[in-house]
Image (tube, one colour):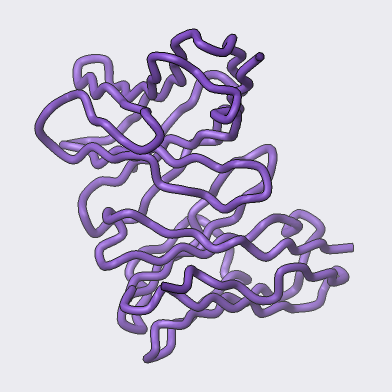
Length: 113
Length: 113
């Protein structure tokens, strides 16, 4: 069975721009979570979607947003990019709820110049 | 709010020796606890989880973790380390089955041949 896929794998943007990242979960998985990974902060939870509804949210500013479609695919958007947004963005899917084993995608490496 | 701490940024262990990667948590009630591993150039992978029951949880690749409620700890252990165990290990906690999963900052494990 195909794993979690994330596109694009790499992105380079400049400050002030916006970006959209995409995640396709494992077939049958309805929960999708997003994380930001940086060397200093480790893995930080962004948000979790289930059945097109945001069920959990982390402590990130409103510039970070997401959504989930009826086929469980999810996107996250970051507006007005800042240098500090440079990170590896990971998507994870699970059979609901998230306390089941999460399966992670390879991530999208975002560099903000 | 829940939190998890991994007090060691890096742990070095000789091959064949037992290894321990430490994790302490702060959460009210009965936590859901997890360990994940990130191998170089590979995605995050689930190792094991504790929800209830036996305090010693067995997981993938010969790893196990011991839940200690009085010390609020969930240390990861393996009786005999392999060089291939070298990776970044994350401890994580959740309040309940539907809540977000909060990860620690990670501990880099180096197994020395």
